[in-house]
Image 1 (cartoon, helix red, strand yellow):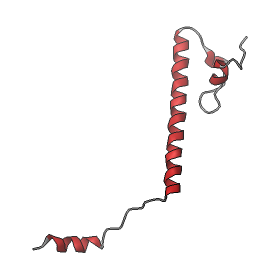
Image 2 (tube, helix red, strand yellow; image 1 turned 60 degrees about the horizontal axis):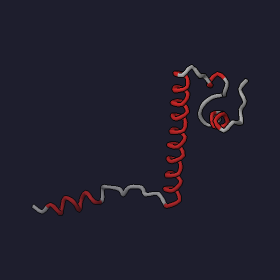
Image 3 (tube, rainbow, N blue to C red; image 1 turned 90 degrees about the horizontal axis):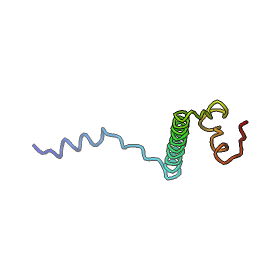
Image 4 (spheres, rainbow, N blue to C red; image 1 turned 180 degrees about the vertical axis):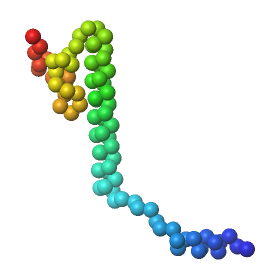
Length: 83
């Protein structure tokens, strides 16, 4: 028996996979990159806060939140004054 006959029959049963166009692939790549960068920034802010708390410096009581609306960057650059 020829193995080619089986493949010819199966070829009509298998659908091709979806390959998005270039614009959609680029948008997905940029979205993944943005999520990864945001995740890394939040992770860094949490690590920085934990290190400061080990030194008995607790900025997290004075700045609002972590993540997208974080004040840590403003705090580091001196734009937030803590009295």
